[in-house]
Image 1: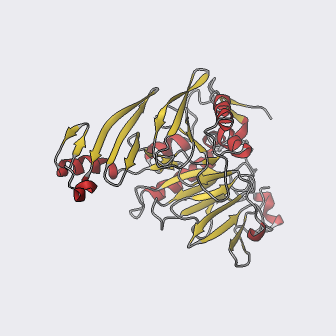
Image 2: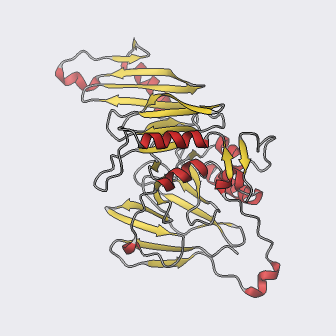
Length: 380
């Protein structure tokens, strides 16, 4: 049977605290426990895009643009895998660094190969307005703001709206410019045009995974498979819980979710991010021995995200100038002895909480040709 999950928490330099999330079952009751479903490992699912993306990532690591991880800086290369045109095939996004002028390289897959389709973003990431399928690119200087909203259609990045504003230069005596799509507009017209996009919910893409063999392996061969390997009962429970959250009047429009295996048992946990502000955190739900979706006590992370060490099964966050560590792997976890493996990913905000993503991730009955020629389940 699946082992009971144990939460170990440490606030540096406070001692370790452990709390059981599930009591062990009485052996006398085991006769009435339903047979456990077969667990399918996510890395047994194969897609045609996996090997091409893996080769691109390895080639980038051998290039001059690759910046290895540095303990004294967060300015290193990262990458992401995300379906930004909703065609069922994810794109590969590579972020060389976090410089203010750094754009992400976007690759897409068609047929049997992957190719670069363009560059976009600022500070090494892209603001993705998933509900309306737009990507945001903006540059700011002391006196000027220039940006654009782009639609990713086929293999092209097509500008939907561009804008320019130099209000910040008013003190220097410069002529004030407000432009939408290259045409001069009044300030109210400019603000109205910008507001329609500023109010849209979003996630940031580009800097989800560090460059390491384990991160690359998880991103390419596991991250996109959870919706396929989850059984109907698990999907139904996740969808019911997320719909409950979605229809709660207190739920932020920037609420997001993600599936990630936090303890290495090939059964994903459900992480729900309450938003993007500094006070936002994550809720974590796990499946018990009886395959019942249950919430861990408390909230986790800050800014609506958590960092996760894929190899060590440790997730953590900086809260109030202290680093807080948690693990679901077992009750022998000690934060004081933890050493990062370097295989780090950001979790909590892979999908915006909306009806389209709920339908995509938790469709109970597989669609016709779900396991098509582009999706194979490996034996074993």
